[in-house]
Length: 141
Image 1 (cartoon, one colour):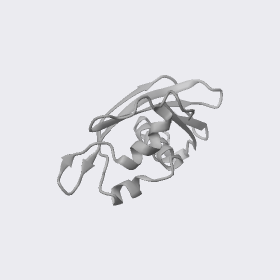
Image 2 (cartoon, helix red, strand yellow; image 1 turned 90 degrees about the vertical axis):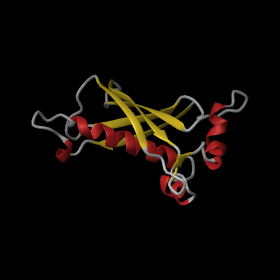
Image 3 (cartoon, one colour; image 1 turned 45 degrees about the horizontal axis):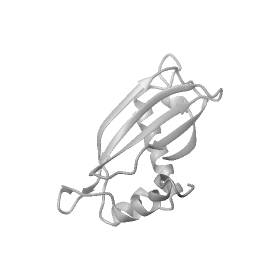
Image 4 (cartoon, one colour; image 1 turned 30 degrees about the vertical axis):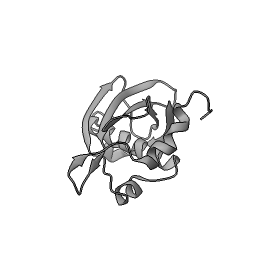
């Protein structure tokens, strides 16, 4: 299993009239977590795109458990539970407040897609190489 954590502080402009983090911004927090997780593997989405693979979102699920408030420091835990072996990858996200309480959880499924052929493609080899050690029971991650 691959996991990565990133911190995001809730900005005033991201809150609603009640002072809660507006529900629509959770998708952006998931995205920042995914981007930071990729970067921690030594490359970026941009580099993946330059190599000919884009990753459009095909589905998203979110469950709101507790509110986040303006100026809260949120920990976004991004989890890849399995090494993708098809045209899709699902990232799981868990958001925690400073007290360590789970406030939101969700998942985002993306497709591996070749923009030239306009067809789904398999997991790019460079990504497989970076992720494989996290899913090999014989090797520590």
